[in-house]
Image 1 (cartoon, rainbow over the protein chains, first blue to last red):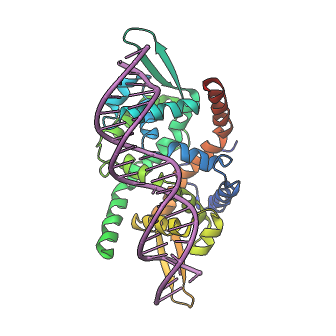
Image 2: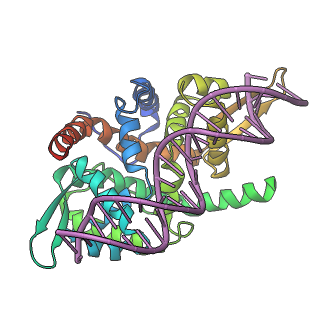
Image 3: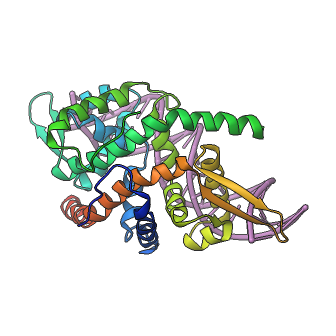
Length: 143
Length: 143
DNA sequence: CCGAATCCTTTTCGATACTG
DNA sequence: CAGTATCGAAAAGGATTCGG
């Protein structure tokens, strides 16, 4: 499998990249069959990436994750953890103490998501000011 | 502004990475103030990334984008294009022909998203089989 | 402590009809 | 051609209650 070698693709690789984007979009319209749609659909919700990031440091218990993401509800935490477990991104281990404790840890597959995620987050950090500025300008002109 | 220098961070950078994830999550709970939440919220919807990928090749007209993404409705295409324009990711140019034609092109800011997006898409492609397999196994055991 | 179940609100999205 | 306006369905998310 080919890999990107540098942070920003050189201008020369642009056409190759966009051809690949075309292939990635048009492989199939069905979300189930298109890796891009399927995966972006899986991690594009409100909490998934935050939970993966919280578990990057170390395995954590249900309550620890809640403290790491204070504004998530128990319902959504449970549901998002289940989805991630279903996708093989994390493993759930129950310790039959009383009261019970449950630990979640990233699987190797889940760990492998951290790298592309880091790229995205660095991009978010470095462009956030510019994006907010663009929004202000747009809103000032439009309304 | 810091930039990633190589495609995959070496294993040695992992602990640094998770510390940064912590910082990125806890900087602020308000989506407006947290770059990660704000940006993931902006590109995490159903159509945004597909549109950006479609425009990677070259500037395109409204109808061309529709053909590139056959299952998007006019309503959602318009709305998503507006959001991207508001965020400074693309520029809209109207040619006052009759009937009118409108062209959309990625700005430099929009182009800069292609790189982290490519990492994510490569990851999606290379892990999709494993994810689908994990789902089948989970569904077989649970239900 | 962890989580299932229920109910309800908000958001997102799609279909349709209409316009310069 | 490139939208806008309106409506309703569906999905996502939050609050609350109950249970092992």
